[in-house]
Length: 256
Image 1 (cartoon, one colour):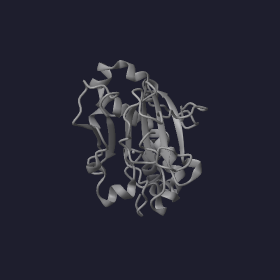
Image 2 (tube, rainbow, N blue to C red; image 1 turned 60 degrees about the vertical axis):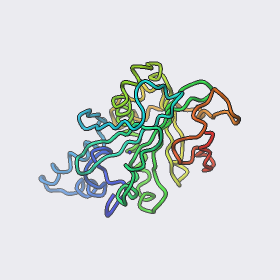
Image 3 (spheres, rainbow, N blue to C red; image 1 turned 120 degrees about the vertical axis):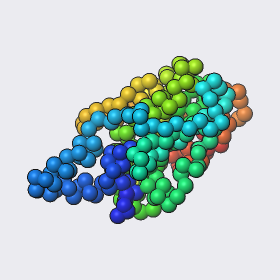
Image 4 (cartoon, rainbow, N blue to C red; image 1 turned 90 degrees about the vertical axis):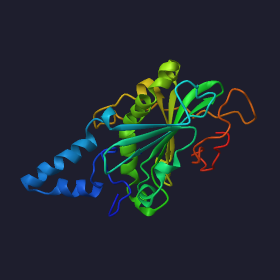
């Protein structure tokens, strides 16, 4: 989960409370005072991602930790507030659209949504991030948004784990479920699906600036549900109304 308004305004959730253009401007100033002022946002941009449990607010809407997501749909909606600098995680059966209302959220598009799926008998967590498309400001900073989403994704997954801990304690095997990340973009370079490995590993924040944060597994295809009605795939219809087949851009959410 920018003003000028740049849609990728870097908030504490995805780096800094300032828009990315201010980071670049301040990094080029030569005065000692301004150089020291620019160090914090730059450090947050390139430093390790850190999860702070005290900044996470969790809402359970029609679900609890007792029902396995292979039998009852379970979706995560994660958003961030500039005012409180806190994260809000809704755990529900469908996307919590009330978190995504308002022009500011529609402009920023920094939410992260995810859902549990059982595909051919195996559980997996499918995470969706919007990189670009919708308006030109997002397109201008698509590369930066992809980098930031990738860098902060372990923090996002850690928020899912922490916020839904009762479920994971009831069903510890879900920690071994593979995490599939869908980056949605109108730019082919950033329109992709990545496997980030088991949830227990993908939710561990990575540090460094030399590519160590991109800890996904190559050469794996996202699992596909059976084309016909079956008992080995659930839910039959995705709770996330975003295109599931990124290769074609066709919305196959009903059986993806």
